[in-house]
Length: 350
Image (cartoon, rainbow, N blue to C red; front, top):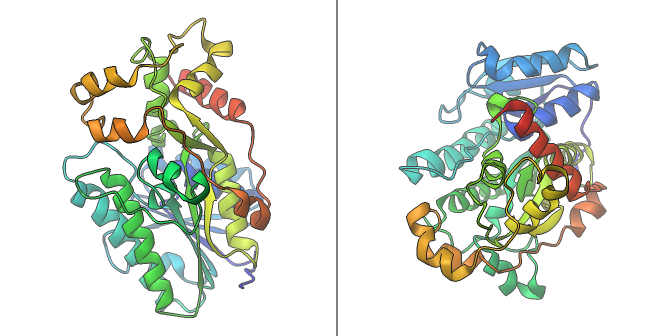
């Protein structure tokens, strides 16, 4: 159990990312000094929104250049920090080389940051942004779970380099984090295991891959119908609060499933129709599974027959009671999250 001093600086890796930007905002509003580690502090398009946030907040912001794949590059930024948030990790589903583009940055980056934390005496707690993808690969895994729900005790055992490599990278990276944690007793580790994160981005230049789902639903790609593909959804603003509380609540420990709602693509579209259905071709019906099996792999190689079989018309569910109890997180309604995300997409003309 670690008590973190709010007067001490806090390191956020990948500070200009979609989730990290909201976390930085929260920290600054609470009066914390943030050491923001980014690839290029001079790139105003990517970090300008953070500078703007700092100007109107109680906290202070200091930028540091760092690279996930460069050992020791986070050391300067970590000096004097009791709390380290490691949020930097690739999130993309379209890759040519999963080892180079997903697995190496995720695993080696985690190793780099956490090994540095072993060398910096001030560090008391590390919070790693993980994913529900480290817990499961396909919706069928939740059906097969004890009690039909994902829990923090479970690990993804079905992803591989060849099948759902993003999920594989997340499980390898988080396992690496726990392995390094076991090798020392200076700091403790907390992980935030998020489902699909939606909500308005603070910087449209860094908008998350999640926005591509909204584009598919609202842009006409699915006007014939949407697959009832089971997923979990959580608001980026709630995810930022979860990170903040995971850092500062002394009793926080272990993994936290951070997912507000169990849903599917069709239900997401149907939730948006009342407000946006007049102007945008949101899908109104379910796409039959047999049709997806036939044409899915032709439309998008991610829609392999195995992936369709294991996710479409299969409910997704996760137990989020631990984060509610330990970290006091009350998730906002799904309707609010979805409408705010879709509106942000319209405003930014994605």
